[in-house]
Image 1 (cartoon, rainbow, N blue to C red):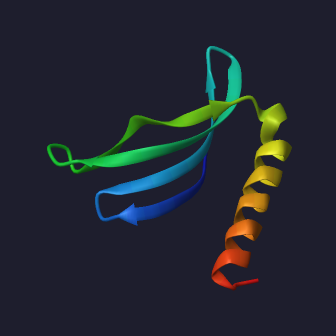
Image 2: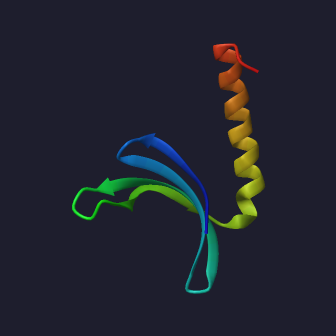
Length: 76
């Protein structure tokens, strides 16, 4: 299940998904690139997969990153 697609460039995007493989459910944040032969996006090796029990810590850490960057560039 795809929760978000973030366009990076015309030929690349980041997808945030929840997947189940062999009965194991996990989250992924992965870079997808456009395949010019098929004109469809394919997943790359760039990204992470994680157990869903870590989602709160990931969200918290990304929030800290966002706020530290906001302070640097003057946004709230």
